[in-house]
Amino acid sequence: MTITLKNVTKIIGGNTVADSVNLTLKSGTVYGLCGYNGCGKTMLMRLISGLILPTKGDIFFDEKKLGKDIDFPENMGILIENPAFLGGLSGFDNLKLLASIKGKITDDIIKKTISRVGLDPDDKKKYRKYSLGMKQRLGIASAIMEAPELIILDEPTNALDSSGVEIVKKIIASEKKRGALITVTCHDHAILQEMCDIIYKIEHGKIIDEQVISEEVSANEKTDN
Image (cartoon, rainbow, N blue to C red; front, side):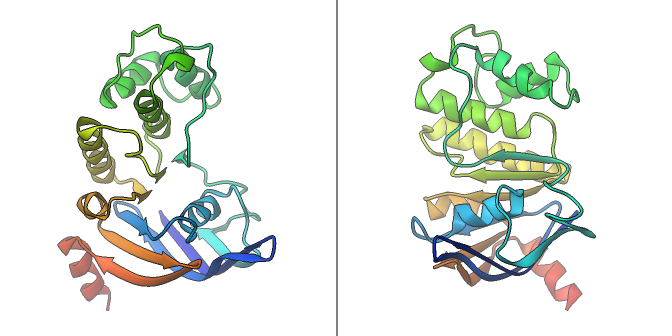
């Protein structure tokens, strides 16, 4: 899959939150977004995910135009800002309810995904009693459980201890190896560098810098040129 953003601008309440963004994103690559709070990272993720549409410009998923040919990316897992689930259900029951929408995965896959993020799939504790870290882990599980082509993770390491951060790194590496296209933000730039192939720095909705970290991606870029 290739995602192409062409001169994408988004204006909300008179404020330009994305300013003439041009990007090409490809499967099997991890893209990081960095910048100060309010710089436009989350808004760019919202645009890519179809949660908001551009004021100007176009977003294509291969040949399909977002907002015209498709309303949302066809195969996406997403965690933007704080995860939210039904407080009276367990983690497993929440994920099973979400999975029932598409009916693509079994209970066994749901349980294995819960284990992947460091939670107990047989824990009957209600979501309302989860710690912030447990809620974050369940949010990550919801984003990856159906093995989507596109994974969008906004600050996935929030509220996680060091072991949780390591789990996130391993999950991102595994999903990349599977061939997923991943976009991720993280307030800790050192952690972001460990997770990503390319990092884009954003200021005032503009991409002002690109840092290529992966030697493989760098070699591919030279080949393409």
